[in-house]
Amino acid sequence: MMEKKIRQFTISADDFGASTRANQNILHLAMSGKIDRVAVLIRGQFTADEISALQKTPAKIDLHLDIPCMHKNYAIHHSTPRRIMYFLRALINGDISSHKIALIWHDQLQQFEKVFGTKPNGINSHEHTHFFPPYFHIMCHLAQNNNISFIRYGSHGITPKSKMTSIILSLLHMYNKRIYAAFSSMTTTAQLTSLDWILSKKDPLSLIPHNTELICHPERPEEYAFLSKIY
Image (cartoon, rainbow, N blue to C red; front, top):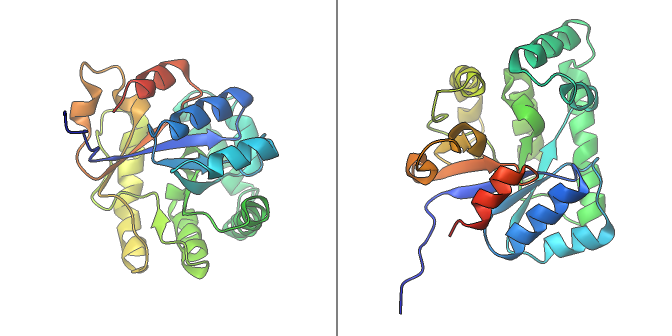
C-alpha cells in the first residue's frame, strides 16, 4: 500500500464570501482536504447552508479582515501602483485612520462570532492591508485580546521576492518584526507566499519551503484547477 503524502506547508484559501463561485470552489476543496484554512470575508455573500457546510470541513476558519472603502475601490484599480496611490490618499484624508480601522475590525470580529457562533481560528486581511505597520499592531492586539493565536505573517519572511507585491510586503515585514516580537502569544508559519506569484513557474510546489502559508484564491479558474490536483 502506497504511503499517503503529507503536505509540509499550509494552504489558505482567501475570499470566502466574495462570490457564489468563490464559495463553491472553496467548499469543494475544503471538503476534499485540499486546503487547510479558509479566510472568510464576514461582510461578504454567503448563505446559512454554505456556512454550515464550511463548518463541517476539517479546514480552520479564519477572519479575513477588510476595509470597506478600500475593498470597493480595489476592484476598480487593478494595478498595484494605483492601489498604493489610492491607499495613501485615503490615509492622508483620514478615511482609514488607525482609530477607524480598529473600530471596523473589532466590529467584523463581532460579526464573525455572531455568524459562526465562535471566534475565528486565525486572522488575516484582504489585499494584505494588515501588513501596514499601524494596522499590523491593531490586528495583533485584536488577536491577543480575543485569545486568537494564529495570524498571517511568516516569521522568517516573504518568498519569493520576485513580484512588486512580494517586495513591498517584504519591506513591511522587516518593520513589523518588532511588533510581532512584542506579542509572544502569536503563532504563524515560518514563510509566506501566494500562489499567483509562483503558479506560472514550471514546478510551483518545489518553490514552497516547509512550514509556509500558501495563500490562494480558488475563485480564479487557474488556481482552482491547480489546487484540485494537489495532494
